[in-house]
Length: 305
Image 1 (cartoon, rainbow, N blue to C red):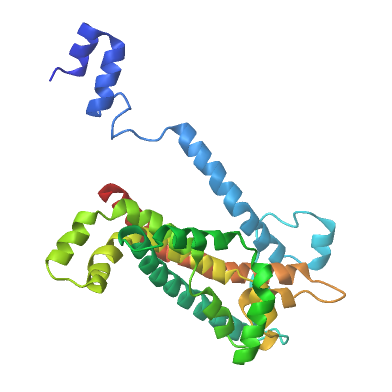
Image 2 (cartoon, helix red, strand yellow; image 1 turned 180 degrees about the vertical axis):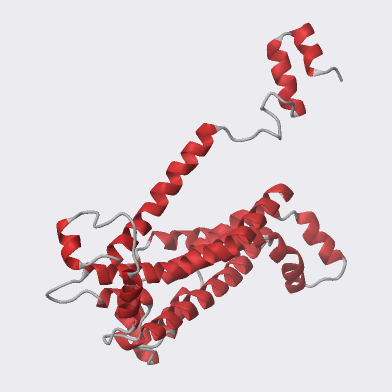
């Protein structure tokens, strides 16, 4: 194969650039291409815009009500008073912050695990198994996402009341054990990422369908399952509508107790913002701990695909 300079001499600069792109040469079009200043600038703007609301919340939480009422930006750097606000939120007499934190963790973790498991099972069946009515059932599941959540509140409340689950966290967990979006997500991913040859090879080797799912489909679905688990965890952690209806303030979740920080006649915005920041901190910790593994899993699935 001729070199890029030789190609430039014989066929022109356009052919040389094309050869450099194919060979990953030093012209900046190959695999060793590094981001330029424009890429870093765009990423920096995105990071600043993403962090700005959280940082502004921290500034308001470290200020006081009088300063907030006089200045849109009370200060440019948070101070140590934010920890006093955190202490006021945690030790508030109107609710049990520790109980709310444990409820949010239990609901989010259990729901994320259940949605991933059942959605992967259903996605595997819809994507790789052949049975009568498969497409019709999948369309029906997807169509349920068009129904507003508010329409199901009254029948769901009747069921919860008949079961005696008022003010119990299973009233929040059980309705969210399966997600129509999760089924669609896993179906689309497994259709592209899981070859039929692997399933046929496992069946020829004598593996049952459950064994095939556990050993073949589930590892193949790990990147999509990780994303689905993260989305579900965030959704349940920030869920306010249904928990505010079925749970009381003595057995609530974090978003519900943050709402209780607002007074009937007077609202201390610095206290509310401190509570909002405390509610966001666990999500930041989850991203820090799971972000690297999440990106690695996604890239691994992309390369294998």
